[in-house]
Image (cartoon, rainbow, N blue to C red; front, side):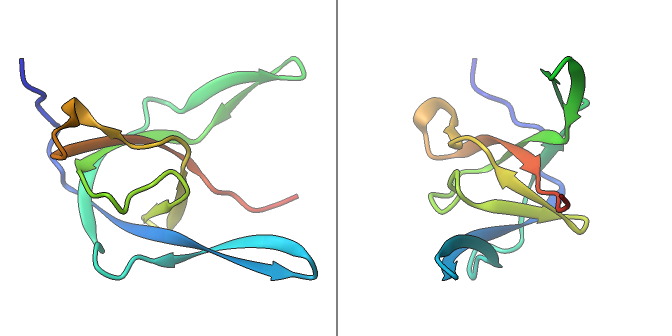
Length: 113
């Protein structure tokens, strides 16, 4: 049975990383991709991801994105939507190896100490 995607109705912006060295420390900044923006996909959170840290249950802000396949979407990139920035945390899956649809997991990038 062929893969049937959800409707791709959520607009997103792909950001590619740029690395710089500040006082000997490598820092990553994200800039919007020039030709792929915006792109559309489906965005499903399923309540995030739970795991235990030092005896406390922590829920991380994660989601699954399904979209059209594009070779520029890689594991070190980020996706933004609704003023939130999410980092792609795994290599995007090329569904059925047909270069038609792609699925990947993202995690919210949050600042703070």
